[in-house]
Image (cartoon, rainbow, N blue to C red; front, side, top):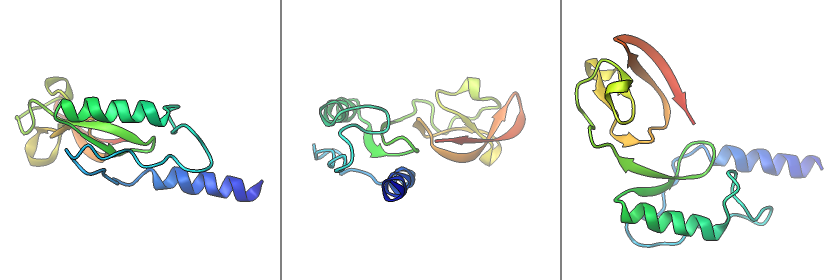
Length: 125
């Protein structure tokens, strides 16, 4: 039982990295692993493949990002635009550079944001 728990902890932590699939190649989603048939969000391999096709068709990158597995990372339409609050951006208003809209939706990690001109730290997993 302890060994199974250690394997699950390892698998959960390994999902935190930005392991990307080949972009634009139609490459398949890697196997989910021998211990389970669904990812951490309950999606089957077939569902992941369908999401990957849809993501690539929308111009996104289907990548392992955040703590819960694969996500469709899309370019933000207002990336780099000046801002003072996240409600002015499609994604987040990053505090770097005095306030610019984040480059992607979603935007993962820990980063400084501006909310009504005030700086805060936000962590998105």
